[in-house]
Length: 222
Image 1: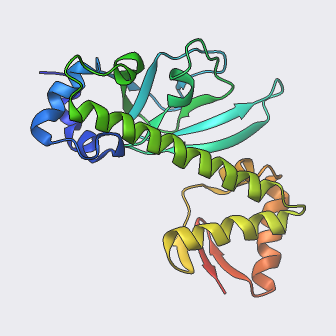
Image 2: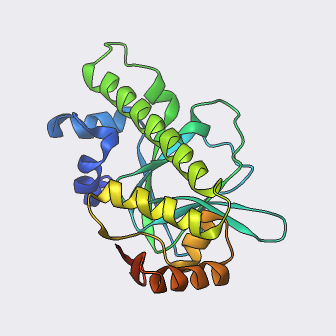
């Protein structure tokens, strides 16, 4: 039995394989040289300087895409949840060197997919393979939009403006003024490129000013 068999439900739900018939999925995974690998908490799945030749599909656990400078200052670029892919932009460009790392937050597993086999269609040019390519392009486009959105947040002048920009975007995305975010306070500070203490103080002031109600990672916009 293939080592990824126990994660088939997660794989089937992944956007990368959207539109792929369940009966065809296993042969598709074989075609793409799928290889599962377990990892532990705080373990690095990829590091700055790596030149990945495979796209990662998270099967279990969670991970952060981070940038760290020489002194250990960290900036969070994004979070990866089960069913999401990562490193595709680097893997699709031969020899591209990563300027970010992917670090696990908890024990989990990843499925590595040979990017060369994704980009080179089968001799029969099967429709399922073409669909995976379209799904991959869609994922790259979504991440490009997400990067642009983050740039909008961090380009604001003050910590309050950055928080308001981020929280407004989350409210729109989640369709309501009450929502939870995926980051804890330190991670949110790293994502918005602000000091945690300054951000926490600003959140308290925003609550006193009647703009928000906050409880850990739960927010209500008022």
